[in-house]
Length: 297
Image 1 (cartoon, rainbow, N blue to C red):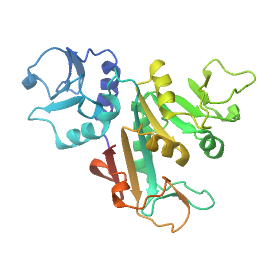
Image 2: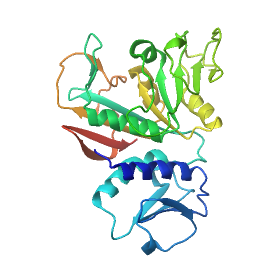
Image 3: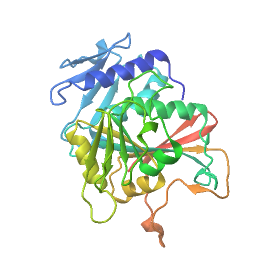
Image 4: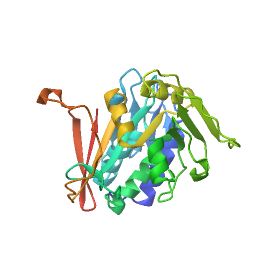
């Protein structure tokens, strides 16, 4: 989905102003020149749209947007897709956590030789960078960091780079780490030499051998992180799904077939259809020559 610069600037402004909003008493108002203010005013006719909050509700009903008569369908669609990454319940015990996957029609994210660039098209890549710019943090597993060496930045869009969180139960080569605040999560005592001041090692005890995703998210929440994009790999995503710690999931379905390769999601085997995880009220978007499915979980 293409987004005009003025609409993207509006989203970034909403993100910054929402940090200081009192959701119990204030609303966000979008003006006719695409600025945003916080106010206790209730006169919609003076504005393009109003974002109202319901702090006592769960995340999926935490806010609603009231539109004036002059709002374009394009802006409505952009707000529908992106506001959910910004307007999250800051008083919840864990951050809003989401996954975005680019995969083939048959569910593959890489070939058998781990080739994956680029399954998603250019518009999808830009969309993924928009999500990075709108959330507080981006999280990956240690194997994803070692193999893919991702930069985890927002170089394709205007905005601030997110905090990086990496699950690393064995040592990482930190020279591949891009600058910026980074948390290294481990359930084992890790030692690094000459660690940069921006890097913090966080040990979470877990006898199972895997870090509890709920505990990880609770730590991030305590550090002021209210939204997290989980970018992989498959084992990390599996743990978040099985622990029921994801708020949203997106599938970018590329018009291609591999027939073999690496699955984007691998869960325990099921035998009956009623064991399947069903998407809650999915929405569908055209992203270039592909389709994206967006759903709450």
